[in-house]
Length: 326
Ligand code: SAM
Ligand code: MD0
Ligand code: SF4
Image (tube, rainbow, N blue to C red):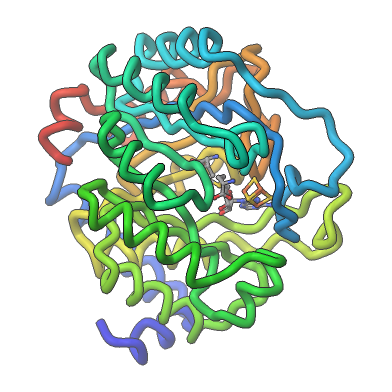
């Protein structure tokens, strides 16, 4: 698919054609991995951040309650997630000054201990120096996540205020070059054009991303974009389908962070092969886009997700199956 064709599909509102698009995408997923769907536990272990992204609840200037989990807490929560059946732990952090201007020893130790536990690990640290990225790899991290949000530099400047586009891209490429899988991601509903989306989708392939994501923007109280409306979900779903068609083997999340557990089925039907943002109830952990939705209610669990998958003739993959897929 070239840029023109991608743009045409993004602009298309013919119901029959869109239905066929989703069927084609989910058909490819079934061909590649049958009835298996992967599941990632989400451990947002520090919500302190030095940055001021305009879309984010956790931006520095937002006056909110924050937390920083201890090493023991992170390990205990991760263990509970692994025991519940997730295939990977996504260790995510704000650009917490405690780590970012000091050192990452605690984070490195956590990665090593999680690997000793036998689980796969993804690290979402924000922008970090090359030497630290090398050490994440040495410690055993499997996937390095860093989302550009858009590949339109002008739009990037508006979203990721005072951050450098090239620096962010460099960190991602360095992680790839030192042997980790990388995840690239974009936001839907932040002022992007269909042409921007097409550029992003093609860039994801050019940089060799193993995992690719899109999330619909969710407005955050207290942030500069709090009055920007959340977009119709059709754009996100079409982008998921396009990613699947362009990259049949890619890991493509259906994030519970956007619409909670209620949003799972549509995303899987659009071609996603992976459930992210599974969070233990009453753990004090938060999501990012929807920081609390469905968390304490126990909606974001393997159990709940499995029930929905079952009704679709699908199931959560075993660890062995996930490792073979990687
Ligand atoms: N602080 C690190 C960083 O920014 O790279 C790690 C956290 S990162 C995984 C958080 C991601 O959540 C952002 O890159 C963005 O794609 C997504 N996100 C943040 N706020 C959002 C919002 N209001 N709506 C939708 N997605 C959002
Ligand atoms: C998710 N809330 O998977 C998480 C987050 C960070 N690597 C991912 C945005 O939806
Ligand atoms: Fe900080 Fe990440 Fe939120 Fe930006 S997206 S404000 S870097 S936590």
